[in-house]
Length: 406
Image 1 (cartoon, rainbow, N blue to C red):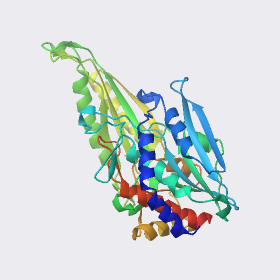
Image 2: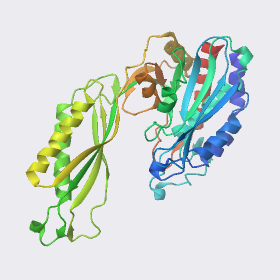
Image 3: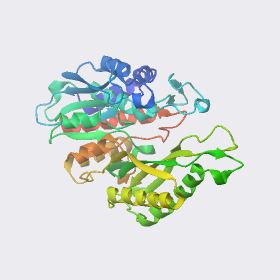
Image 4: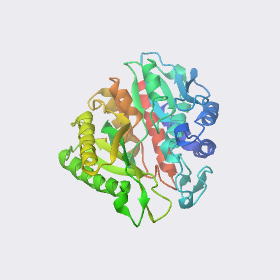
C-alpha cells in the first residue's frame, strides 16, 4: 500500500482511536511506589490491540518495592528484510491524579468534548500508545523491504524506569541498527525535536530538632524554622554557583525547585521538632551532578553545625544525562522530513529538563529522539489529549515507517 492510502486509513480510524484510547484510560496504571497496583490490567487491554504483528512479547519484571506486583513491558514487531527496527517507545504507567476537587471530569472516565479526550494519562502517555498503534496498524510485513517496525510499551517510566526501559536495555533487547522515537514530550504544532536532557536529581532534606510548646520556643528547636531558612540559602547558593545557560535547552538554565514537603504538627501552638522537604533539580550537562550534590550537602552541614539540629540529605533519584543524540544522521533527517511533510513546519532541535526513556538509550550509546504534538496538560488536573494532535502524531510516525521501513 502506498503512503497516501495508509494516511487515509488513519484518518478513517478517528472513532476507533477514540474508542481504544478510552478503553486504556479507564484502567488505572499507577505503580506501587505511588500506592497503585501497577500496569498489569492496562497491559492486558493493550495486548488485545496488537493484531497483525509478527511477534508480541510481554516481559514482566517483579516490582522492587512490592514483590507481589509484576511490571509489564510489551515489545511488538513487524519484521522487515534488513537489520534494525524503527521503535516507537511509549509508557503504560501514569502519575497520581492529584487533587480530585480540581478535576472537572472523572480522571478514569475518558470524556470526549470540544475536540479533546479528557482523563488521567491521555496525553502522558496514552496519546503515544494509540498514535503508535495506528501508525503501524496498516503496514503489512511483506511490504517492509528495509527495517522492521517496532512498538515498545514500557512500565515504570513515571518513577525510576528500573523495571521498564532500563531493564529492557540491560537485557540487550535492542541493537545498534535500531532507531528510537520517544513521544513523551512535545509542543503545540510539533515544532521541536528533543535531542538532549538535563541531569535529573531529587534530594530529600530531613531536619530533626526538638518539639516543644508554642509559648516556650526557647526550650525547643524549631525544625520548620531551620528548614525554611536553610532552603532559601540553598536556593540562592545553587542558583549562583550553577547559573550558566545553554541555549540548546528550554529553559536554558539549570532549575532548582522545592516541591514536596511533609506536614509538621497538627496544631498551631506546638513548635515542630521534625520536618522534611524535597527538591527537584534539573542540572545542565555541563555541570558535574556529584559535585553539585556534595555542594548542597555542604550547605546543609553548615546549617547543622550552626543550629544544633540533625540534618541529613538523601539522594532519592539521580539520573545522569547521556550524550546528545546525533542531529545530522539520516534517521534524524527522516524524522524531521516526516514532521514537515505532515505539519508543514520544519522542527527546531532542542534540549529539555524533563526525563524520558530517551535518556536511557543515550546512556547506552544509542540515538533517541523525543517528539510529539504536545498540549501541555500532562501531570495536571483535567489532563487531555487533543484529537488533532493524536491524528497528526499517527501520520508522522506512519510517514517515518514508510521512509525507513518500506
